[in-house]
Image: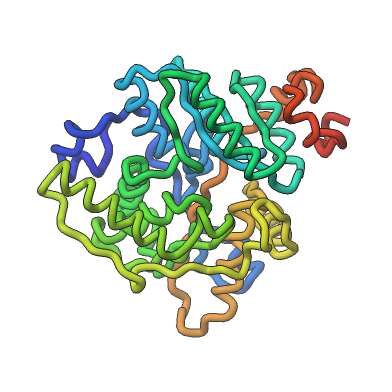
Length: 362
């Protein structure tokens, strides 16, 4: 198996560590029932929620580069940062465990919802070393101590984002281009994605240029300004493009500016992980009409932004609009039932589970 990016630029395949983790290509299809419900028939979805039967979502494309790099460097630990309910941290834990590497999670506060508690139980079940902090200053101090006491670590920033891992989403658009060429989906006029740590959207921006698509990317802000901002996304896109060209001169020289994507700010809700009425309504609507499960931190807010966009923009004229679904659709409810409850969690995270928010554990 190889990647469309490597087929297009073979020298990258020799220069970059990569290992297959995902089930590629991920499906793409029309949202027929949702389109009827909202009165816009050209709604489409790219199903990265089905990127792996082990644990899906957008992080799989990044981890295909990160994990072999850690293995090549003979690292014992992958240390990563995220909100206390981080999907990225869970994806890293599961896929690193399968590769023989232990994950250390450094977790910072976010609103406690059902998904947060589910992910904590799964983090524990799949062998993560969990360190949860009650404040950002406490997290900084705690991180210094953990780095000092875990030699031979591979540090992974929030969301697993770097120019190196962002290449996974450059390849993703070349995958989409192949599906367009095969008639599985029309070329979207707009592509909507969540911006958490900026890697997915930055990769989509670079990949759109490389694939020769005219699609315009719209990122929906779902995280704090430090991790989710316009300037950072453009900078990451440019760094990713420069890295690929450095590794393979056949990669065209590319420069990205403010004209290359839009950042939608109105669906964040003011705090990472905060549930919003618009996001919740979008989650419920796509589940009712299409049977697709989203969540309220990332994908629900992104879908809400997309649905409002197609209702308000009269210049669309029925053009195709695509949602890039970055959530994981693997069902872990049975594993969670067998986890032994919140008492199995380390003491430093018990405060997040004082009230059980998981209905099927009650």
